[in-house]
Image (tube, rainbow, N blue to C red):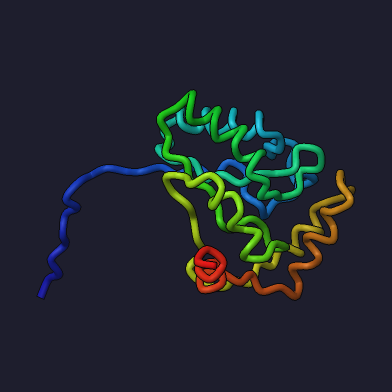
Length: 165
């Protein structure tokens, strides 16, 4: 019997753009947005190109290290909100080196329209990226990538417990 293929009720697409993330280190690309101004600018450009939502991570503006400082988030979220109609999605991923409690700080402080969550623990093996880097811009990058050889990124229940406590 031939299968009945269902047509979608609506033929709409929602584009979500993750502007910087936390996986890459600055030494991998000179195009990685680090400062709040760079993150805001790239998010706004993504919206102008058709993104409906922007998934945002923060980075220390001096070192490019992933950071959950609510004050850094406030800077670029305010700019994105004022200059676009995008739905702002703040990460609860933070980075592989953060505890679930640390990863919830910005979401708790900002109360965004949308927040991300990984639906299970993950082994992020970032260490192969080390082979592509000839020299590191910042002291934290090598140890950050190397630490992923033996790391379980805990999520879901850990995040729920951090949020509810």
